[in-house]
Length: 379
Image 1: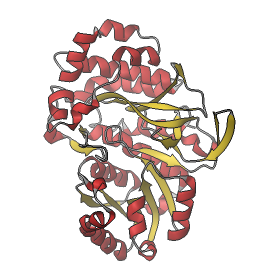
Image 2: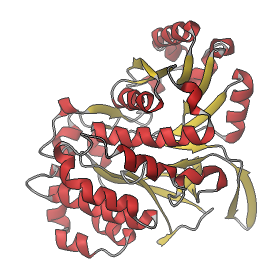
Image 3: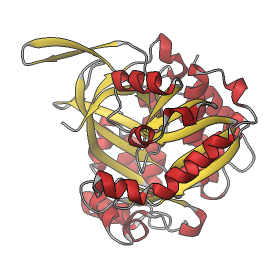
Image 4: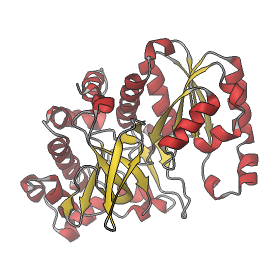
């Protein structure tokens, strides 16, 4: 049973989900969810989004100019018979433009959108200026449903009702996403927001000083008790005394460096269930499962095994496409990922981390028919 698609279909029927610019996208969205496999569904959805972005009346400056210079037309988009051919037609986008002061507004924001109606989201900025986009409420709802489905598959959520969800994280889209997650779980949202710009470039001592007000609020709220879910980066978790989480049911942690072994050690230290997330500033959250499945790697005339966390993206608005030397990557094969972010507010296609392509297993059946990734690395 694909509970994610079931939950997303139910959520998208809520009044207001297809309001505004989303109104004309109800049909392709529902067709994408109804497809027999994730690649066919993504092809349908990406076609609709791509045509919106290259349209001179509705689209974004970057994609309108890209279409003119690259000969991308509605006809060529419609004729694409596979996701591979459509991605090849569109090509990688220039995400470096998002590092500019008004990069998103000047290049990637469609004509009918307004910044004041959206929520800011930025990359970590560890390798230079942070890249910034803005999210619509609908896109954050899709991420919240992804998280809700994954949490429910791993934890008895009935016990979380009427408790607090303490969201320590960036200002903007992250907070709104968790506000929506709290609503889905019947919890009380408590925000603990902070500015992340330049944070990861600080020394450990400087970071501790910058994060002091956040840590103090986190400790204060945790001490009040009745916490169903607390969110934290693994680094933040290590800075807080473990007894602070005594009256917390579940901790949701983020960071691509998380491994099954690291997660297990953190669970032993806190005595709490931890659920990992793979966050992307433009694609938002993907729920993680430490399912204990062995991953086979073949390389350098060696075969070796590892057990890691499987992440499943918020399909169809985020898709992780994987190729290996021009051919689709096989399951359990490591290859570079190509992140496809297909929203009405932003369309991006970019090479990202390396990962192993994962199929949903018995432990992750809630995301059946949606491909996941694991064993993330930068090379």
